[in-house]
Amino acid sequence: CITSLCYLLVGDIYSLITYLGFVQWLAIGSCVFIVIVFRITRRHHPRPVKLKHLESNFIQDTNTMNFEKYQQKGVL
Image (tube, rainbow, N blue to C red; front, side, top):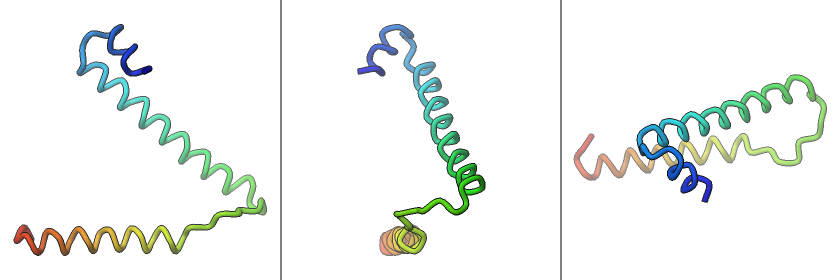
């Protein structure tokens, strides 16, 4: 809904894409920055969700699946 309203105001789709991309990366960057700040300032705060091993296994499995998929197609 908000994107549609912005498109009506802007009129140029490429400037809208640029603007929304900037806003998205600004939000992602601020989230990463806050996580780093909380890791330093709230060192002993309880963390109920720990995904270190799950995330690394997911990323490794995803990369392996993509490699095997492209290897089967003959791209690699």
